[in-house]
Image (cartoon, rainbow, N blue to C red; front, side, top):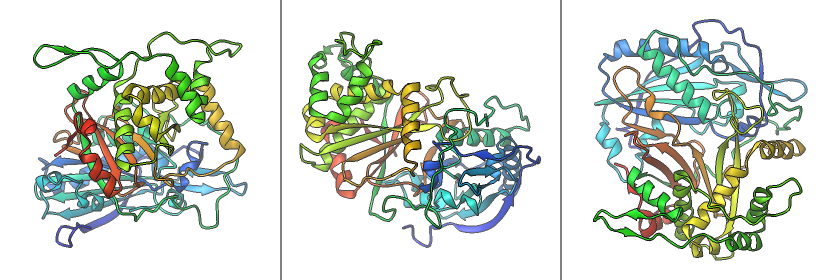
Length: 486
């Protein structure tokens, strides 16, 4: 916990309303929204240098920009409501959002960015600490906290996770920054609020009296670090997973790993029923579903290469038995996977959690490419038919999303290096860093951020049990590519 000397002092709190009344009716929560009712509010924010605008001028400007932004995002100023049939809606009733102004003038930007682990004070720069999304029935869906520092400013947003996913969250944040920087409302990424896709269901999620709770221990001891992967490190890693040659700095080249053979697919199917079944579904490529021999080389993406590296390193750090089944979950954006496609800026949750399973023994004894191929196969297999299969499965048994790591062998990858986090220029420059609060943190929770330099670097916010983090920090394979962000 931060010391009392460094904890923020709250200067003011008010409610900000949309500058135009909403004409939008109730929006029904989808099968992608409803499971998030048991999750914490999303907490993400940006660290900035000292504003060039005096604070007594900037705070009213931020409130005005937020008010105008809410007119473009009416659900964020509303409240959740449940009807007599058990259906949950967002009532776009202009009830408003919280705006908090705080001061932490004893902290400098270098104080916050210099520790090895993420500074605990970042957790104090958000309101709605560990607030469960179901409580949006009787409290704001959004809260913004602006915290003054000795030589900088932090703007943190907490948003109900049953209302937005990462795509919608960062579109709101970008719009907020844009309208603070300019009075021009012609912003190109207009949110789409239609509720006519397959995600809208007649199934009812039955909830306990008083609402659901998170499914993990939010007070367990954890360590949190930011590991950065440079563009060059990612290119080397991708070349390795794709069995390509990468020129060394001295001009020579090294041969990278042996070619992937078709027998590895059969091994995956035999040794791991769950992963094998998904792979088999993917490789059934003709109408009579006869399994075909695959001869083409699968191209592994940069991000899948990073994920495979992390999967191996964390599994090794956990010292799991070879027979233990490990899980790597990835949040997959369904907007472009559905037919017909959703609009790119469809507002709400349009994500599904795609698990890949493999024994600890396979993850560690097989090469990096094999791990990456398991992830690649599952992501590729997640087409419109698979999205609808996930929807059907949920409709058969409506339930909240079970976040956490109950068996000690799971990794959950969230967020995305494609999100425009560093596009949030409120008028005096881009952010120095992106950080998150305590929300939805547990052993094995990873969040992917783009690097600040915009060259293709990736930052991973890694949350692990202390003993696992200690082992990861000295893992030779992982540290060959990852560096600690300062």
